[in-house]
Image 1 (cartoon, helix red, strand yellow):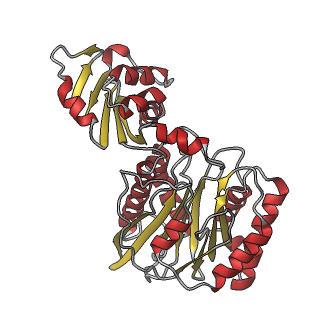
Image 2 (cartoon, one colour; image 1 turned 90 degrees about the vertical axis):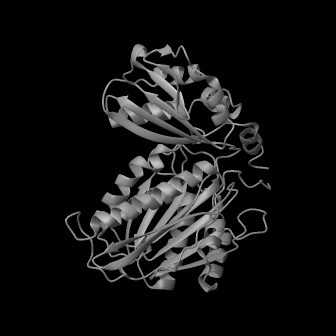
Image 3 (cartoon, one colour; image 1 turned 45 degrees about the horizontal axis):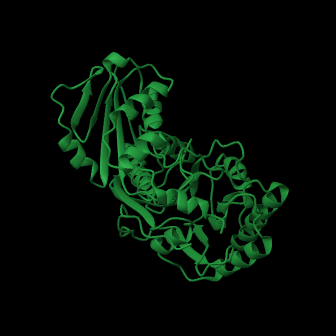
Length: 408
């Protein structure tokens, strides 16, 4: 299926080489397409790893194994298969993953547990072991590739490659953090989003890397939604090679730890928003800001109720300032809310304050705002200090067309 590039797409950034990371791609031909669909990242000895994974209970073997592997804290390689999610495939799916892990581990002379595998695509079709074996062999012998080539290769219905980069000064040394991600549909992460990978040359203890990644996830990947569906394969992994030469970061008491955590959060936020910008059929990026809730968690749940509402999303697609649909979404969220304290606005213009439409409400600036590509919805519950920001996209005919034809 040929998909038009999203009108919300951003250019792929200039990402420098990161010490201890070598990227390669190959054609395993998991689908009938003329493109690379297997990505291999080789990581230096001593690389630490952290990860967050889907809470979907029908998850893939890749996710099950990955959860176990991150507890060990070490990584030497990553393999990403595109075109086949290998989810809901029973023992055959697990055998395919273990075959890949063993093949790469033999090549590198490491433990299979240090080889991470992700797969994305159609659910319910076992990953073909013969194609996987040949694809991995080709990748192991392939020349190094660019970050952009790797980002293209991990995609499925993505319309543009997604990458992000940031730097931080740690103990007088500049460390780089870079990431690539894929995701366009089946996006309502209950931990992370589709498949995302972050790499840094900083030296970071695995427990602290996990702490930083988990914290960033709460306000980035777990605050986006395209269609309210949580994937069976969602995975975000962070790898730290230690090649920058800093003393390993083990807690926020260490010099430079705050700067590193901030840069990691920046990369995660960039990647999360790129996924929303490429939401299937999306024409508008929507930011929902909720304040005045009884807690931050409550604000996030209310924000997601708004962001997941088909009625809100279609109203934005139609450039209709129907703030009553936002009222509906707040009320159905199952969180504390008071109709008579609720305020709602679009693009900096309040439409209703403290439970009533504004007498002098002028819809003209709101209508003009809704014609743009980036839409702001603001909700103040008037109950407390809780706040959260959630991102989504509009719901258009394009989403239906893509998903009605997905397996064809």
